[in-house]
Image (cartoon, rainbow, N blue to C red; front, side, top):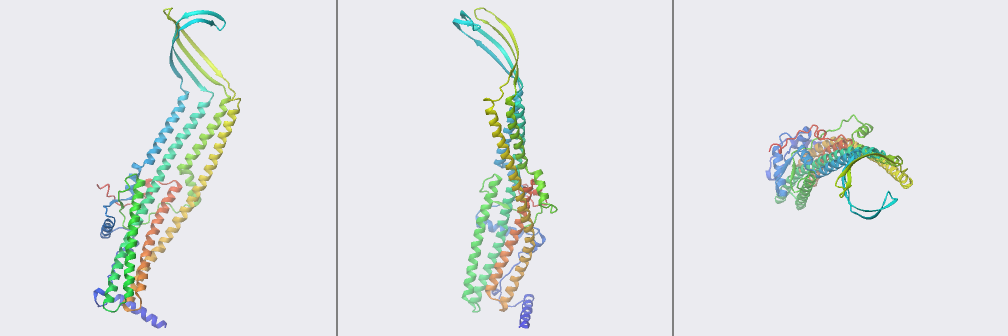
Length: 492
């Protein structure tokens, strides 16, 4: 029995090497689309024809013109058009002016006062002596009131607003990091949909060839009606999968355009024709090392720490309500009556001190201090939760990246094996050792293997991008490390 299997295997190998002379209409025209060569070389070189065929198929399927972009183009457009970044910039400016406003509390008040009165009747002079007065007193003068530092409260307010101003800057940077993350993730999601279309187009072409073959074999009496029906069904399934993928491509185009801040109907189209691995994070770091980096670089952590300091300052500001409030004022004016005809000059310099010993017998001040203390404690716990979430995110993206890289190697072997398996299945079918079902199964395995490889590469790239974000190391430069796809937009 083993000898028979060996003989059949040798026969199949010989048939795959020696040309078979028969009617061309009965042989499946299996074409090499260079998928494996491109996968091994990790390159887009010499793929102009494949790209053109894919572009034309997508244009026909979606009835749209395509706008080719690379990742650099998308990032630049997103940074320029993002409404979220513009909002955060205005909020940063608001925090800046609130800081300047707090500083202005240290400046003196200056004002001019003019007063004209009409006095008719009996009045108490010095609140003691009654006197009948019929006159029009006039006062005109300038006043300068300088709080020095008041009771010290303005200093705490200034320091608190400064922390909030710096926190607003970190909030802006964090929003920028999020924009870079979302742009890159959506770009690679769109690229995955595009490359998946290439596989499905090749599958549709192969299914069509299978259908032709089965019909030809049935017509000459060497095939079965069942094989024809199976071929028809597989062709219909291939078309359905292609339509579904075209729809997914269109939706991902809209997702990318939306995050870039442009019209979602613009049909963006990645320039890559191959799934390429982009290593963005140094593999020498473990999870603890990456977490240490995140504590230094994460903008949201820096912002939260500054907010805690601001709240602490506001809590401590309550103690100033027990300190004396000191002001220095100077007034220069002229006073008299309209009946007197002239106004006499007067000057007043005064130092005023008010010692309130807290508001509402100190109860209001102490309760406000306690309320502010609870805010600080809550914010400290929020920071602790944030750091914990950051570490969990790093752990997740670290292992996702590691496992995706391992899956890429396995996916490569699967693609090569599936491609060879399909070839042997075809040879076996021609010599009668395999059924048409075996061919269909081999074809499905090839399609799944290729789509699995593309997904593995995209998953790795997305995990690397996520890891950059989670550690706070994401920048335009770090995202584009080793990225050399040409730009069609900058050409124009």
